Amino acid sequence: MLRQDPKRGQTDPLDPHFPAQLESYIQSSMRPEMAELQQTAVQNQTATMLEIGSSLLNRSAEQSRKLTDVEAQVLNQTWRIEMQLQENSLSTTKLEKQLLLQTNEIHKLQNRNNILEVRVLEMETKQQAELAGAHSEKEKLQRLLSRQSSTIEEMEKTLLAASANTSLLQRQQLQLLQSVQSLVRLVSQGRAMSAGQEQQFQDCAEVRRAGIHASGIYILHIANLSEPKKAYCDMETDQGGWTIIQLRANGSLSFQRSWREYKQGFGDASGEHWLGNEAVHLLTSRVPYALRVELQDWEGGQVYAHYGKFQLGSERQFYRLSLQDYSGTAGHQSGLALQGTQFSTRDADNDNCLCKCAQMLSGGWWFDACGLSNLNGIYYPARNNIRKLNGIRWHHFQGPSYSLKGTRMMIRPSSF
Image (cartoon, rainbow, N blue to C red; front, side, top):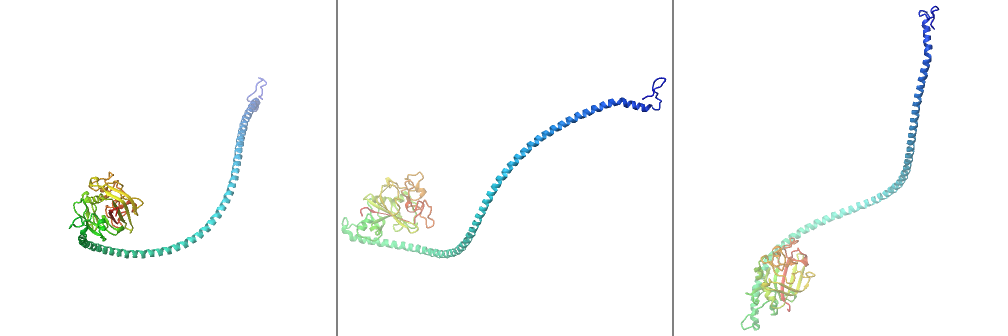
């Protein structure tokens, strides 16, 4: 406290105890205020702490709830995983059992495979031995084939030479036969129509009836034909009397001819030839005739087709074909053209096809719509006769594109 002047009743600042008194005075004056400020600060801090604590509690509760949810999810997921693990364990157990079974089967198959491998090795050894033997046999056959080919070539050369000799012999035979015919005519003058008149034959059947049994070339005097005709007579096949009207044997004669040539005939009666459509028409229009077609393939097969009734129409009818009563071994049905088919050549198209069969398939024939046969097609040699639509064809014998080795067509009266 300030010391008061007793005189003035005031504190004296010069009093040596004045500072302490002042400090004491200030402290006493400040205590209530400081206490109040401290209390206020404490209250404020307490309130703040309470708010913070409340917030922390709320956050803690929220975190607890989230943790609880997470724990629930974890538990649920854990349960699912445990279930899946159990299922996987069961599946694994089944797979292990199946694996054991498969392993056992594999062992069994391996054992069988080992046995089979042993057998295969044995079979391969045998097969190699057999193959070596087959190769040896093949080489032997090739050598044999080579020798045979050489032999065949020599035989072909010999055959060609023989054919040339045969042609010479046939010409000599023709001369002899002509001499024989002259002698026969002299002997048969008693049966002639008038005295001194030579006996004349219209076909080979008349020659056969005259008592001549030798096959060969004869001169025929066909009624209404402008000149006599040389023809080859077969006196041996089926009692003879056949007049040959077509022959294909070696390809020495081309059958790519015109309408006029097929009408008059071409070739030599001693070899390949076509007698002539006009001559055949005149013969078959006189009395009923039969036709025999003989076919030969390159493998040695021979068949025939026989028609009990055969006739050719006139030139104005385009030598229309008439056939009946088929029989023979050249197929289950006729391979010749249909009834009423007209003859066609490269310069006279009378078929029923826009393609002109005679130009496409070659030769002259009763093509109809190119038909089942063409015995006047191109002659193809052996090993070159397959898939030849324009060759010598007969569908019901060797198919539509096999070219034959030889053919012969011959006629005689049905009443022979």
